[in-house]
Length: 253
Image (cartoon, rainbow, N blue to C red; front, side, top):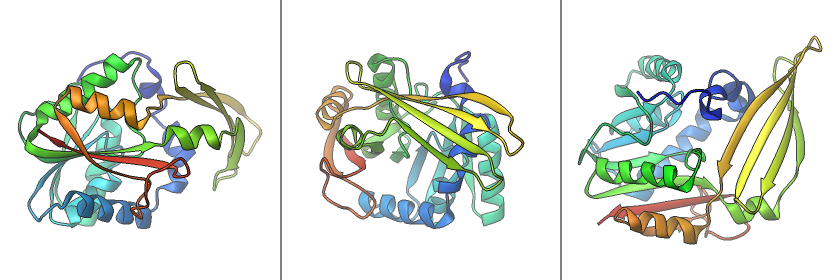
């Protein structure tokens, strides 16, 4: 596994990520999103699927429950352990792989690759993001499909709120600041964390490149993947400025 030093996606995806966003990750949500994935890709029992940047495995488990052969890849070994534990509890089998998403250690293996919850655009430049798509294209079988679940840049601009906050179940306060740089099309979100006793610390947060559909179509074409459909959410709503998500499906040519 490649070492990326103190990059934000190493530091934030320790405990902060699950602490900040864990309340959103319900089993019902994962089940709905995974049902959409299986339907949108037309996946049949026994199809091989890579859950790229799988995190704690919430989609991997649901896809495995549908009879798919799931490989779960993440940079964070601790998240992979959580995924293994979740699979054991659910009585399903998944294969876990610790690797950088630019260096997927497979070739011509998968019927589909899924990348969920805005996990594309993490890296330092478009060139590095392109390496992810190149690696994914290499890992797909001929005719295999790639699904990218992304935050819709147009929606993020139209609904931009710089400051927000929420309280965790244990009383921890998360104060969120969003800085959107239109020149680089990057959203930097960082947090001040105040525990129930008043202790205060800062979290590095996350810094994500927001791509337009035009940009993504061009990038995918460069790696030999043709966009076949785009929707605006997990209810298959039409994609547009008003949709929070931009879910792209492409097929390896």
